[in-house]
Image (cartoon, rainbow, N blue to C red; front, side, top):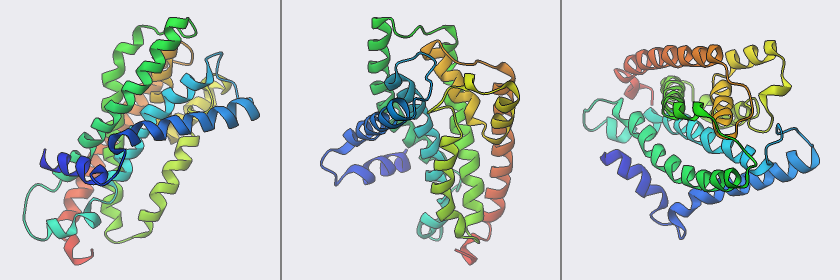
Length: 250
């Protein structure tokens, strides 16, 4: 909990707007996506108002991306602490996932305000699969943690991964159904995309639950869940292996 407090306070303690920045980023990105992809590119949103369509994907994607980027540099950014006192090292990346959950909660409030507005207008029709939201959040946290700690194990020797993470996350976002709906893809393409990017089926399932439009696939979600378990296992094994000798290479 001390690490969670540190992560949350340290970033915004000397800012004027503080946690308000949590609202600024998704709002500006949503407006940009609406303007470029909605008005100019004319990419389909399955009949859903563009603002809630893009915001629904961005809100949940941001949590995954923050978990991944925040945990991917665990050994390098915490070398000074790790070299002075012993404690279970895995606590550090887990604390990052929890502190990002606070940020996600704040952004979720913004999303829910917009969601209830469009629901009240009758523009969207949510359905019962929205009850699976806690499972989706757990899967996003697991995927972000698994990816992150595996990459952090590699960055102790190969610092190139530090530069590749941000770029890779950005590319992965555009390979997710955030600016486009799954419905424009064939069944084969959906399967391939889900194998390459396990976040795609999660984002689509979330949109299906909240917006009532999209593709809900138990099979694809099961693949993503299996992907998460494998990543967590491999990531934790690699993490524990590296923590024994990382001070010699960091």
